[in-house]
Length: 201
Image (cartoon, rainbow, N blue to C red; front, side, top):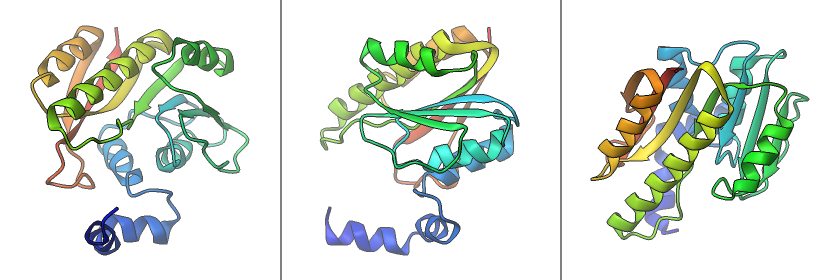
């Protein structure tokens, strides 16, 4: 990481807020802002967070589901425990079919929401990064379709680019309502955008 990048991060409004409010990442505010507007996670819900490390989205999801809900996070990196009995994490690669088997074995019932802020390791070669991101987003969608209840919701990060419309069509086939969201916490210069699929068919 360059010194310039670290310095910019320290000045970042959401980075400072995350430190102050004890969130594990500034990305927590992207999910919080989307939930404030669209309310796609509710108290008592079962939520699966794909690519959950370091745990910022898990924290926000736990706030939304409360004591009666259940949150499961998966990432290739180990996630430090959050300290809640109803938040469970596993180490795994969502691209590995075995991960879906493990997720299904842990869930108490079909999920109400699947959320994914997963990213590839950025190479700096834009076309390659976009393709890798779409692959991860598509894998997230397939997992969501496999574990969501009818009427469930899906929220996923996507990089804008030539394959974006193709991915969007796949989401629209499976959800009654689809929104494209750029949360305020998402940096303006970033190509990331979020797709929200509401009410799985």
